[in-house]
Image 1 (tube, rainbow, N blue to C red):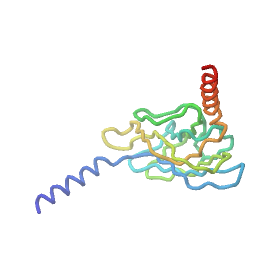
Image 2 (image 1 turned 180 degrees about the vertical axis):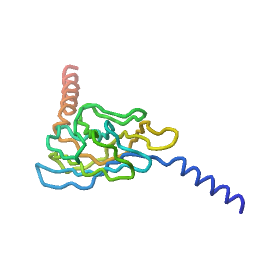
Image 3 (image 1 turned 180 degrees about the horizontal axis):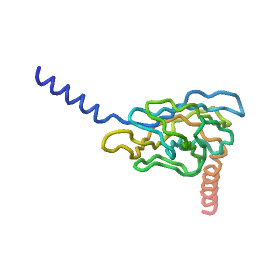
Image 4 (image 1 turned 90 degrees about the vertical axis):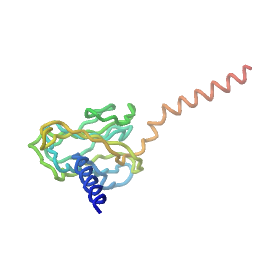
Length: 186
């Protein structure tokens, strides 16, 4: 009985020590019809974390076409880039040919555990694949209070439009042509 109690206490202690605080975006729904599908994401900040001005989250490799229609809650600014931005200490996969979506906060501090609101992007497809997100916020308490926290996770994103595949198809066609040409010469 004593051994089980000790093991139970160890397990509880391990769980407490591994509690993380994160900003977590989640695909809520995809609405609309071709050619305008709206991808609706909700985001939450978890316990022991605050979203301060300059904190952000990025959804990687969202689309080959830069989105022009977005909405976000007050205090959040939308931007796109082909690489990053990425918080320190995380290493997401990031295709330099596909756009990343980033929302950066500039309002008053939001203490966790809180819903951050709805973030939407319009794109031309509703086809889904698994992608990656990262986020950076600020630790609220403990000896590391005030330091930045980075997290990484999986998120649903659109399958790249065919135009993103054209460079790959061009390389494949050139390789096939070269092989056939060499066979004819030989």
